[in-house]
Length: 209
Image (cartoon, rainbow, N blue to C red; front, side, top):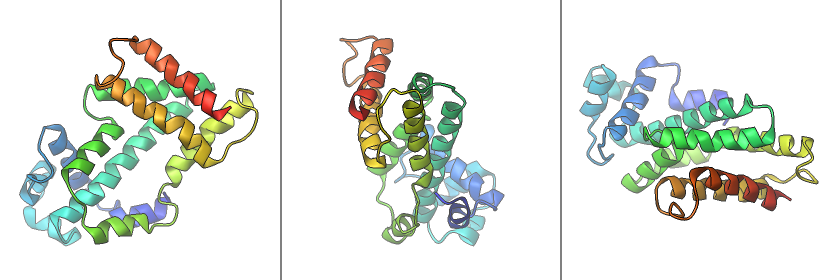
């Protein structure tokens, strides 16, 4: 996502706003459903007055919609930073999977965060549209995937450069499948954790080739 437009949309220059976003995340991690969260819960957790929320937002739904985008974007950026510090392609893929394993235990995985919110609340249409209308709103994720493809090509693990679509088709289903494995919904009685990671790695390359 374009950094300047994201900063403008989410009002990231305002510390009280980011405090509210973090507060939404903490409340969810504590077990509250988004339907039950009140503005007063958010502002109390953020350490600010309730009326302050309405200086920046029109409704609870707007706070939560933008908190979703903020926390997912932040989680992806944090993961991407760790992945890109690795030198070779296999280490980068394993870093994604290790990050998911580590963050699953604290319920801070961006995939789990997304699932919680999508099933818990219907975003106000106008706020959702304002996000989706941003040109290149997913550019951060695209750059992340492109760098992985570039590394695989550089190491001659794949014969050619790939379109973003083909790269995504190879990568995202493996991340989802590994998520289900961690969640105990698929394969835990058949393969070990390390085998599950190896399968994910091999399947990414199989599709990319």
